[in-house]
Image (cartoon, rainbow, N blue to C red; front, top):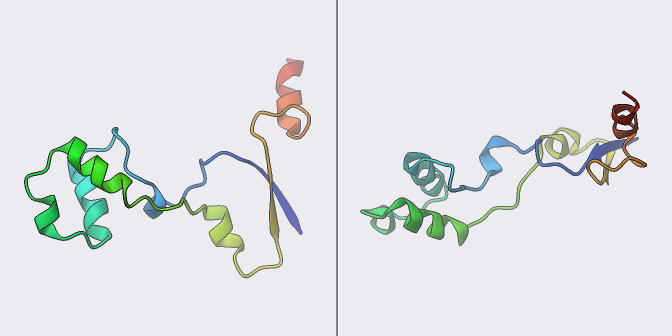
Length: 96
């Protein structure tokens, strides 16, 4: 069975999101600690320095849908987001 989804990342699993400048310093520290970064590397660093360190440790995002379908006989077919031909809901939105 095929599952058709648009290529947006709204389906990311919480633990796989990478830190952004919108994150608070405490959130970035927790993310780094979860990846076994030594406390000595974290001590006294500013938020921009922590972000720079986190960017060197980026993880590829995992999607909830991929996790749910793992081990099943289903396959995800990714379609471009907001594409009027491949995504029928976009055609419906233009009718109104």
